[in-house]
Image (cartoon, rainbow, N blue to C red):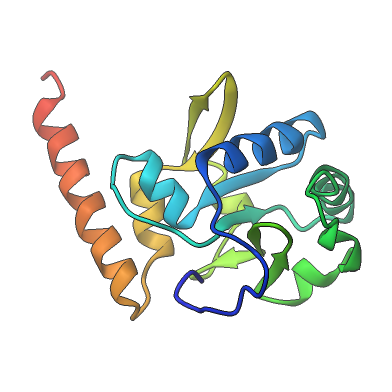
Length: 167
């Protein structure tokens, strides 16, 4: 979702913002997976992103924990979201100081399916559940040029990993 320029007063998130958000999500035991541009960045691609994309479990209990965690953002924009909105809509954009896109599915892949295909990357002592490279490719089957570049990079990384693995 980071090709649109409708962020108003929000700023581009930095790595520190991602870490703080994930720390709050983890503290509330939220079931989420980092996807999108930041996930690609954590897999080694140097690129910019305008938001943080999260694939989330849309159960009411999980959404309530998610809302408690995201209430730590300065504008508490998450308070405007009803508990069932993430289940209702493909993407719910939270335009706080930073933009966080909450997704019930990415290219048809829901949290339940995706949760079997993650890697945990620790940043500053905070474990972040990140979509594995193959899962990221599956969530980037779009017509956007930025997704095509991400997929090309991820395929190269997979090939490098296969070449460098013993056996």
